[in-house]
Amino acid sequence: MRKFGLILFFVCSCIVTIAQNYKQYNHYIANQGLLNPAYNGTREVLSGLLVARNQWIGIEGAPVTQAFNLHAPAANSNLGLGLSITNEKIGATHMLDLYGAIAYKVYLNEDYILSLGVQAGINSFSMDESLIVSLDNSDPTLYGSSNASMNAGFGSYVYSEKFFAGLSIPEFFTNVYDTKAAQYVKTFDYKNIHYYLYGGYVFEFDYYAFKPTALSRMVYGAPIQIDLSANFLLLERVWLGLSYKTSSELTFLAEYLIDKKLSIRYSYDYPFSALNQVKNYGSHEIGIQFDFSFGRTTMKSIRYF
Image (cartoon, rainbow, N blue to C red; front, side, top):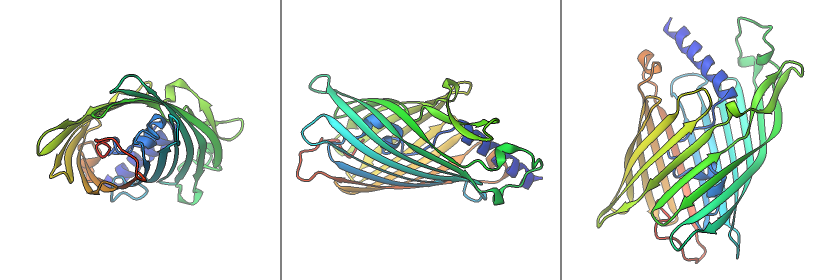
């Protein structure tokens, strides 16, 4: 009965993910280039990020995500350019996203900068029918549903040396099953659009720094999900923090600054949801970030966000 409950929970999660959910990351401040096209180029250096996330370890077919983001400012201009690739498998489904982004910076005053960005690319969606076990083999939404289609997103970002805030819509279009075409097609529906609103501030002291942040995910017809986190920089090398999601998850966050050009990150989710009442299933996320300034002057707090 417990096994059946887990299967039922997972199948429902897959269906919701295909229709409505966008990828989630624990280190969302470090992964802004994957969530907000306006972030591209704002670090003023060539910046790269690799992320791998395994959700609900121990459940067969649970979400597994890998992502790559590379961005840099364009020479002698206020433009920023970016590239992101995301690969995700959930049960029988496989999604591969490829986006190119461009952002433009406007200097509001001596301290604050506004960046506006857009991204466009391709979403590839496929389903491995050999992994599907259905009580109703006539359900057309479970078979023959591979496709590739265009998508686009928009974002805005305001930041200074210690403050940052962003609002983004990573994807305007979502997969909807077209009964006439007998396949999933990309459709614009404001009810399926995901909005991300986030921000934070860095408080610097003599021997440590404190970085509180918050992120909210909003979609029509669903409760607003809020992620609150508190991170402390110790010995100028190690970030340690905790994050709480209103989806009933507590997350441990850690980052080690190898030097000014390279850092590694790790996080672990502990869920308090109904899933955890069956068995303890945590989620792991690891990331590597590199920055190359090529001799250029960088912001004092570049490593902070």
